[in-house]
Image 1: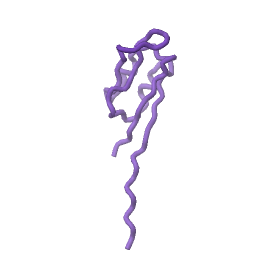
Image 2: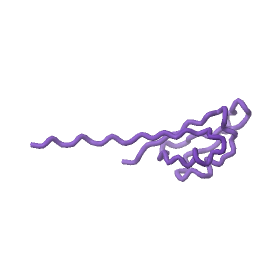
Image 3: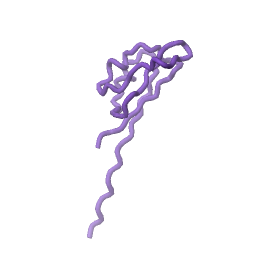
Image 4: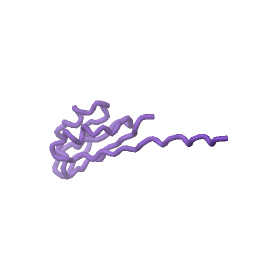
Length: 82
């Protein structure tokens, strides 16, 4: 089972440069053209639930506006020995 990931974008730091969108190997990011940050930029957002939590978007972000989170899949309970 793959690791599930997600991101949070800090609107106070994101300048809508799109570097994270271009760098995302899962193609799950885009700029939200219907919303503006307090500084007047279109922020990045996740558009798919298939983020792996790789962190590449956070590494390429020049303003450190992206936080990446991962959730490990739960293992199935081991069978009881007889």
